[in-house]
Each structure stands twice: as structure tokens, then as C-alpha cells.
Image 1 (tube, rainbow, N blue to C red):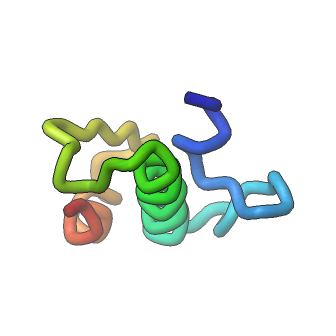
Image 2: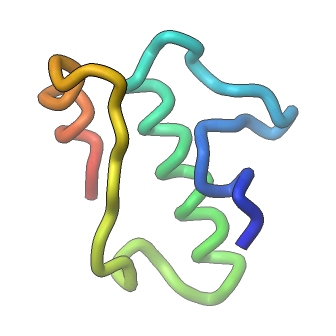
Length: 67
């Protein structure tokens, strides 16, 4: 899988939501979902996710985005 598909990049290849971990999490999950669908799979096939944050204070808001 192309690494670009697992990070918060938009169609133009630029980071979505600079400084906004919530927007970046949403975009990264959209990219992963698109890659899975292209491979004939879906998010229901994902057994585990991992998120890396620069500060733990960002966890609560971002946890709500996870499937």
C-alpha cells in the first residue's frame, strides 16, 4: 500500500488540516477506507488501528473518530 494512503493527505497530495489532529484523523481514515475499497475490502476487515499524537490532550477528540 502506498504510504500516502495512510496519512492525512488530500487528492492534491497536501496535508489536510495542518494543526488540526481531528481533521487529519478523519482524512487518514477516509484514505484508508478508499484504499480498502479499491482492494475489494472495507473498514469492517480492519482488526486494529494505531494513532500517534504529539500530545495526549488530543486523544479524547480523536478517539471519537475511530471506527
